Length: 405
Image (cartoon, rainbow, N blue to C red; front, top):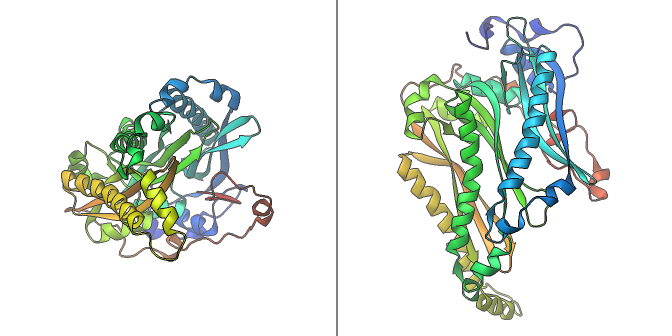
């Protein structure tokens, strides 16, 4: 039986209002969409786990840092902390008689010498459902869009990788840094490392019996060890019976970082996401390039050598996305975003990320159009200028007062 067991066409949102009082992180728009799905707001739920930063720093990462790439011991430690907080969150969800949880997110918050792994989300309640039936990274507005597109949520999932380019950049990159161009050793390391997070979120979805991961959000965070960062992907493992053949073409589980509204829009046009694609290129600006740039900066005008170099680096990362899209038989790649990271010592990384899509038969949304409440952007009504003024910010800028998504 569907987890959304009520008839949304015969029910109005006000039908689900009532007592007892719940303390939810949902907005008014989310509450409306929850009612359309047959749910009432439940309490805001929290699960956490605290680790000492000293423990993180004592992990044996030095050898791995010599060659760059993943630091497995730190990846595993962070994954354990996140999973412990998620398990406690799931226990709280069942205690609260929530049939599901929306807007689930997993964060790292640093408290002096400790790091707290915290999972936060809002319970969804229904008298006809089983406690703890599902969890999703989508807020309830996004959940409605995804459900209307044919995606039934199974579980909040994540994939992470802790990595460092480490001292190895000086060992392997020193010769190439004498000249401009791609440092293929590091392009390969970063391509492999960044795709580890994606592969892990896909594998977790597969273990949950899902055939898709939608609404993937990617963050890169410093994690308290010099030169070390975590790449974390959060999403919702889901089942869509209309994409079975498409999922088989990419190993059984599709993946996407398209927004919920975008997912609905392309379904309306007969398209479905295939795979989230990543392309990375690491380039050296070169000593020679640096000297020429320095001289050129003495006067106004374009630095032609660096313009061409950076253009080529960006094109190379996009070419890798294009090549993988062709390999899996995609029709288009949507939502491409590009990022530039300064790795130090004249090295820069270009990252391109986008979702491959394909037109298939049998896919369409349930509704002719979405209700306005499903697509209205909630306004932030609490502006914390004090934290900005004093140079402190929340670990995740998407965390807003009263709402976590």
